[in-house]
Length: 137
Image (cartoon, rainbow, N blue to C red; front, side, top):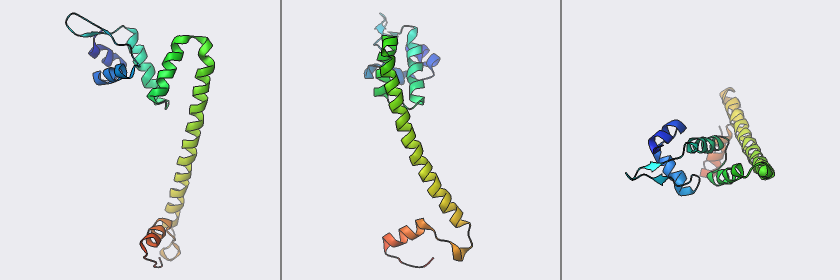
């Protein structure tokens, strides 16, 4: 299959294929006499695997390890499990951070809904303190 066909079936552009080749995520395809790249049909599955792993939050360096593991069979399941467990921990930390940010914004929004004399806007107060403009709200 040629680059455009692989890219179309995998839902990426041709430059993505070339980037994955340079990164070593895809094997370099053989060249036809015409100079066109000739990909094996399973390349589409590999590209889809890479894209799905990215959707799950894996970085390309981690995906490289997952691809190596996928070629190694069941004996490599423990290493794949360790990678997935580490990714879950990373995601949990990001979720906790995002939840804290959301809660801060919710408090800010709730304060903004109070009558003007009872408002205490932490954002404005913080900016005022940092700029030296200590005025009452």
